[in-house]
Amino acid sequence: MARLDLRIFIRATPERVWEVISDLGGQEKWMVDVRRLEVTSEVKIGVGTVIEVTSELFGLPVVHDVMEITAWEAPRELGIVHRGQFTGTAAFWLVPLGGGTVFRWCEDFRPPLGPLGELAFALVVGPHLRRVFGRSMENVRQIAEGS
Image (cartoon, rainbow, N blue to C red; front, top):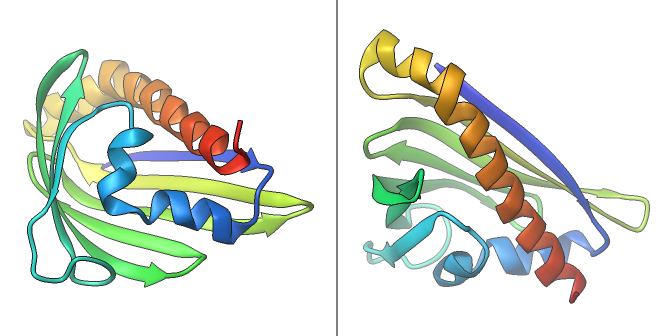
């Protein structure tokens, strides 16, 4: 199992940050690795929504992910389960703190290819994703703060 756990402080209310991260169709605006995103379920927002995403890895649009929203507690938590090439769970948490919000993004997933995939994640993919997700979180900060 692989884990990513990132945090950023945003000088905006949890409600404002929630507006950015919960706009499913607008996630392409801030997620730097997303190349295609489509809500494919009849449910278009909240628990039960299914989203198909093509993301890039190392500049190539090669990761196909099917995600289902499992938690939707505005403006605190958005949780998903991954059912694509990577399986596992992810969550966004928003915690109010001193004039702003801590945005936490946590991913727990099983890389493909078993032990070889886990080794590749530890050495190469994990550090790359930390940088990519960090840039995405910075985009959320800029949008939410209006800068």
